[in-house]
Length: 267
Image (cartoon, rainbow, N blue to C red; front, side):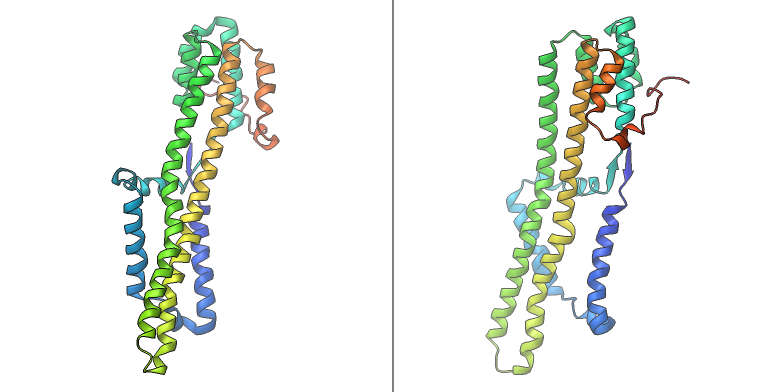
């Protein structure tokens, strides 16, 4: 089940508030307004967009907002209940045969589990099942990597375009040194673009990419547990032994969440 991940927006808002506090505590609200410069914003965002357009095809760029949205959700895998499910499937297969699982998997929502159990029911060799399921896991990792790479590249390009904006400002300032009083304000405006780029990279793009990488690792781990469960069910392992085997993959805190009732089972 997917749930809204409150930590992602909380971290972003906290970072913005810390930045605002650092400015306002020194110069007040009016000082904060000095950090808003339209040409600098255009340089950073425009340059960043141009660099991403060069780096990625349009098809992948269109998925950027879909990828970002995934960072605001949390998948509750409920590993304890997952172990219960495979213990139940193993018990049913030992009592009534693998074909009886066709009814059981209709109650399961996870397509990855359904696919593996159907392969087991069809009598596919365990090694081939592992190869098929592992290939699907690898394909998922690659899809996630491609989506995440856009954010990682944005995190690299944003500070660079901030520096480019700063260099533009410094060049223009150095070409007009006749007015010493304008050097300070001109220098401040020139450096603002570097600030914009660094904020975008270190508060948004790179943290979002890191969160997505962590989510992928969690999903891969869960799918590996599922593969072990499927092979255990197909080989006719004792439900208790299968439970012990799968329990080795998860922490004690997750084990405490075991439902004691199999998903989809009545009463």
